[in-house]
Image 1 (cartoon, one colour):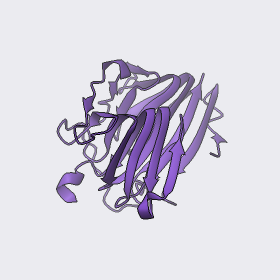
Image 2 (image 1 turned 120 degrees about the horizontal axis):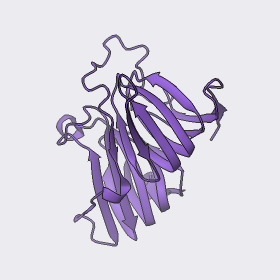
Image 3 (image 1 turned 45 degrees about the vertical axis):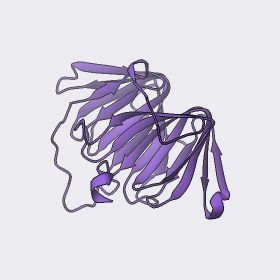
Image 4 (image 1 turned 180 degrees about the horizontal axis):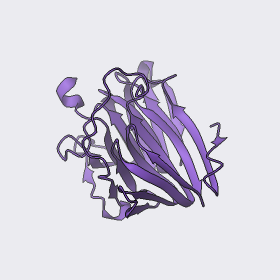
Length: 234
């Protein structure tokens, strides 16, 4: 990963590693950013969902910056387009995903419908449901952004836990994954001969249409996907 240091007038330290951009993705933006003692104001031009990878990350928001959420390891934060926010942190880092990737050039911008409706999903409150389709080992998921809860219209988000399982799947969406715990493994390609093994902080992109197997040893992963309504459009 290649990092750049930015916002030198924000005080403290801010750095960014941009992984998915318009140069290599048609749908999702993704990357990792770090915050330590800085305060970075912005108004979002795109929808964003992120998971905290460590430290404390604080989102100050509202027209008068009168509201705040604090995220720590494993917490997930949703920030809709149009939100006026400040990013702050103490040794904080996040894996962020945004949509759309072409927001600067698209002729029909996404409408702003829920600005400043920032939501936090704390790791300690997440409820996981076991995947009954998997007959070997353990695989469970906590669905965070779904068509059913109506929080996001474009980006889906889920956290999975995997241990000793091997689950076959074909991606009906573009997907960006970051590993939160343990060892996560993807098997893809002919006869599943391509093996990608990832640990904490590693990021994997899975394009729509990929046939692969999920595997893991005491693994926890955060996944963002587009489109959220893939069951309706696939």
